[in-house]
Length: 178
Image (cartoon, rainbow, N blue to C red):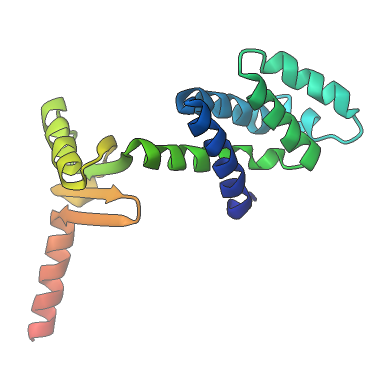
């Protein structure tokens, strides 16, 4: 399991470099590639095997990540050297969260009972964006148990305007009135 404090420290260090070099977008992409190689690829088990000389593991990094910037390849090598390859995805996620804060981006998950058309989804995104004064990137999903209405999750905040919740609240109020 990844250590979130360690992941945040690595992410913050990379963020400092990315901000100084004005390369946030490049680092986002490169860290995704690094995490994919170190965590999800067929080469991942080989890269953590100490019985394989570290120079050979570094050669795998150079070949597999030839398209990413040298600093990102060096970062992948550092994770191998420190035995922290399993943290690569958590580091990439932490970096993206920090970069989103710098770029004024927030993520919202919109859940409805029926699929929203593009116009309605854009209108909801605009209202959230105006309220938060940030650019909003949304994901939407359907949960027919909501019956109707909408549930919006932004970070740790939940706005539940679903009919299911309203009915549950009404039922509890009626039960308490007896």
